[in-house]
Amino acid sequence: THLIELHNITKSYQVGAVSVEAVRDISLTVKRGEIFGIIGHSGAGKSTLLRCVNLLERPTSGSVKVGEVELTKLSQRQLQAQRRKIGMIFQHFNLLSMSTVRDNIAFPLKLAGLTGTAARDRVDELLKLVQLEQHADKYPAQLSGGQKQRVGIARALAANPDVLLCDEATSALDPQTTNSILSLLLDINAKLGITILLITHEMQVIRSICDRVAVIDKGEIVELGDVLHVFLKP
Ligand code: ADP
Ligand code: ADP
Image 1 (cartoon, helix red, strand yellow):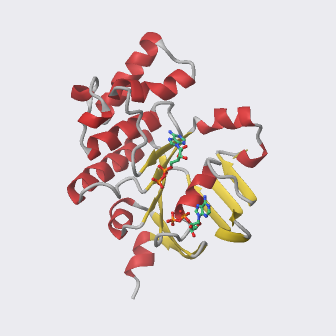
Image 2: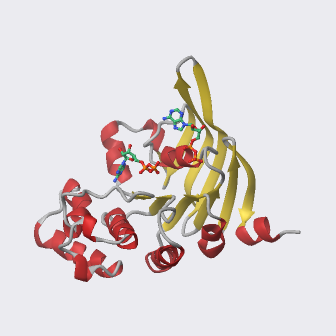
């Protein structure tokens, strides 16, 4: 069954007198439980497309369905509730620099109204999942890049989302750290059953963890299929 359905998504940006089509009539479905990768050069439209999934960007036209809910039709308030089911991580982590690891992870729980012991227990569970128990009281500036991304992952998973969106999540990391983050993502997919939609410009990311891949160029999908089929054909 399909967890994410994008239908005829177009996103244009108005730059002065000129309209730039960052994404052009893209339709795409992501199955429940899979790891789906979108790869393409810089400027291809990957980030715009990903941000249309949780409506960080509003498509100029087209519809976005996540878990049977048509997001483009929701009120702002209804959308906020649905967004809790969609976690997101970023290339530059986007952590709160003035808050500890623990408070960064607790932040979405606070927004959802969870506080006290229940919140503390949930944060402990997440710290364990991303192996940061020893670093709970540190600030982001005291962490390595890989540790920062682990905080980002824990924060994204705090509210128990169905899907995790990854925006170039390993692009700021060295190859060894990249591998450890990729294996954590694989684990989260396998053990927690969380569907992953990621964008990357790195072929290795696609090869090592994705089930299916779409290649995007100039705002359009130019290839789509199983990773083995798309990248190992003659
Ligand atoms: P990618 O993530 O593949 O690097 P983006 O989605 O960031 O691609 O960008 C796709 C195109 O849209 C590029 O031409 C980019 O310059 C343009 N673009 C992205 N965001 C904006 C914006 N806020 N305003 C104007 N143009 C934008
Ligand atoms: P880039 O990939 O180009 O570095 P990001 O993907 O980090 O850019 O995007 C930063 C944008 O995401 C900002 O406009 C910010 O408002 C928004 N943002 C930052 N943190 C979050 C979050 N936890 N949830 C949703 N949106 C966020």
